[in-house]
Image 1: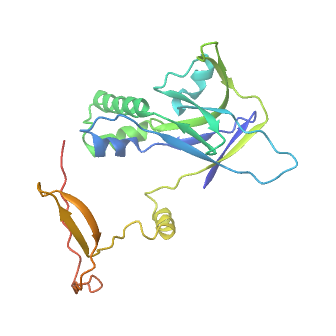
Image 2: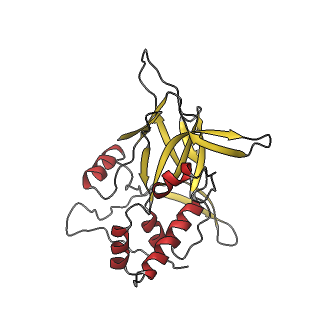
Image 3: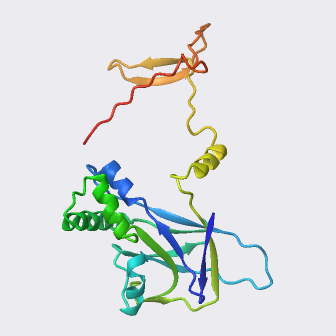
Length: 239
């Protein structure tokens, strides 16, 4: 449920983004903005308390070594920089949409080059198995140097005695993780049906809703009996 960042020990966090799922759900949509935050746990009091990494680099796992070996600077497409927010206790990357788009296009081209069809699930799974790091990034403590225009001109591994414990994520595909989340959020799939008074204007638009104060009553067919299942119609709109 947590991961670590430590320097100069070289301990970093790895994250896997559900990029294939994002593409499948929004392939007809334009991806304008994607934000991601990593929350830091407050560490227990210690005589040997370490500093907090002030800057962290997010870079694709497959590029992590070449990034430093070639003295690269963030391009906000495959590499991003975030500073520690003491008010929120987080590291936030404000827009990684270019990364998501870049990875999606790389995957599609890779599947096509291998003679497959990007729209076929089995071809996608085969390519994913051969390229396991395509949707993975690493979070690394770094030192960032800016010029007089506040532009980042140098990024290097942090050599300071720094440490951060980050809140980890659960795997939505694991049943036990789903049950744990459901137990902590018991109302996530519940709604209430309430008698109300609705007021419309001359255009038949609802302009006011308030609790009904009239003497009204209705007995609804319940869903506890297996024979009385709640019927639901779901409509999807394709863009």
